[in-house]
Every structure is written in C-alpha cells, then in structure tokens.
Image 1 (tube, helix red, strand yellow):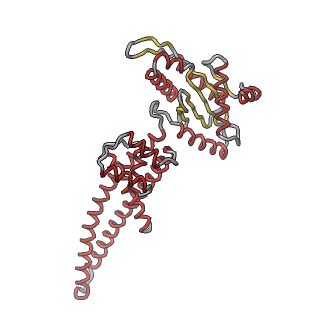
Image 2 (spheres, helix red, strand yellow):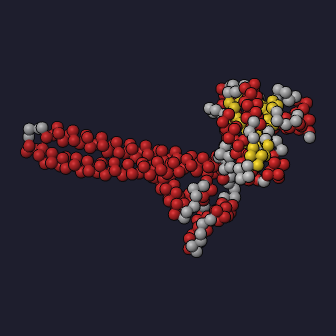
Image 3 (spheres, helix red, strand yellow):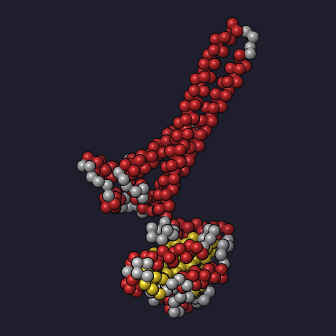
Length: 356
C-alpha cells in the first residue's frame, strides 16, 4: 500500500476517533444524526457547519437534541440522513478494517526483519576472519538489538491501536444499526426495507426463484388509539412487531413500513408458503388477550389484515408493493382479520382499486 493511501486511512480513523470522543465529551448520544454532524465537521466537509460549531464553542452553548436537529436541518438539507449516515459508517468501517490489516502487516514485517538480522548476525559470528569482519559484526548486532527494541515498541502500539479501533468499530456498528432500525419496534425501518427489497429483486432477476411480500396492518388501529391512548397503542405495535419477528427466519426481513403498517420480505419463498406464514402471524396476533398493565383492564383483542404478492419478473419494486397493498385493502374490504393473495385478487379488481 502506497504512503498516501496509508495516510488517508489513518486520517479517516483519526476523524472517526475524534467524532466519538467529542460526542462523549459533550454528553451527546452517538445517534446517526449526531455522528454525521460531527464527522463532517472534523473532516472539514461542511465549512458553514464548522463555522457554526466554532461560534457555539466560543459562546459555550450546550449541545442539545433540539440544537442537533437545527444543525442537521440547516446544514444537511439536501441529504437523506439514513442514506448519508449508513454510507459514511460503512465507508469508515471498511477503512478501519484496512487500517487494522495495514498495522498488522507492518508489525509482522518488522518482526520478520528482526529475525532476518538475527540470522545474519549468527552467520557472520561464525566466520573465521575477525580482523576483516569484526566491526561489521558489532554493527550488525547493534542494529539487530535496536530493531528488536523498535519492534517491541511497535507491537505495543499496534495492540493499543487495534483495541481502540475495535471499540470504535463497535460504536460504528451501533450507529449503523440505529440508522436501519425502527426506534419503537426494533424492526427494520423503511430505509432498510427499501434497500433490502432492491437487493432481493436483483438477486431474483439474476438467479431466479420466487420472492414474496406480505403487507399488513392492525385493524381499526385509529379507533384503538383514540379509545386507549397512544402509549397503549405503541405497546400494541411492539406486540405485533414481536410476533411478526418471531415468525420470520433466515434471510426473511420484517420491517415497520410506516404507522401501523408492517412488511415482510420472503426471498426463495413460494406464494403458498407466504400465505401460510401470513395466516400464522394473523392467528398469533388474534390469540393475544390484551390487558392494560397499569390498571389490569381488559382491552380485548386486536386483529390483522394481510396482503401477499409474488414478484413478477421485470416489474419495478413499486409495482410489487402496490399489489401487496391492494391485496391488504381487499382483505379489509372482505371483513378484516384475513389474508388475500394476488392469485385471489383479479386483474379487474386491481384495475378498480387503481381507479378508486
């Protein structure tokens, strides 16, 4: 690796390290938004942001969530936070991995050089003409001892740097996970859903095989919220998400699509198996008897309506989502608490739904 590449890697590592250290110093959580703000500042990528931070520092302004929102809205107006942070965190993580490998290779190279010098000094020490090589032997032995000492110091620094980078990578993984997770339910968020669906479609187009999508939401959820309050409604969403998550496996992806609507991506899954899974989720939710923890009040039960669509080769992702959504609303119109798939949902019904 050439010197300028090494310098770039070290610079990226230093910027990431400074970012995490600064967030800890000011007592700010390492959220995707905060990390993006401070990384851009230390990297010198956003002069107006850095100028604002300099003013804040001079005025000893306390860094708050509200200030974070203001900074991001003002200085990152043309970026989508999820995309920017996920891209940045992935790039930095890759650079840190390269830096670890670079440092380890450097340590191994130095160790090998010390061993080579030791071998050479041993051979020269066995020669029989001390008048001609005595000085060379002494110099070589001295160089060997110096290299051994230097190597020991380098190994110590390497161990400390590797430990620090590993801790930083762990924090970066946390940042990236937060950028791809729904805060309330812990499921994948819309950003993660969109990117995974794109990847699954590309895989299906290149390798073949089925791909199914389940769209579902909680029946009459607005009425439930109005009756029992939003906090209780949030607990219901957590319950539903836990049930959905417990029923998916392997590469399947469960996501909160928005509000009370959830999505499940099922690669390599035939439509009949996707329908079965949808029924399993529906029955598991229906079987739950809800009680309000604070009062032990009986809240009754909740139900789901679900739509299932099978990917059609060559279609855009939006068409698959629209067909699954159309099946979901067909399930609503059929009385709720049921599953409709796109083999049941006819083209004429689809056209009528689009016209409506």
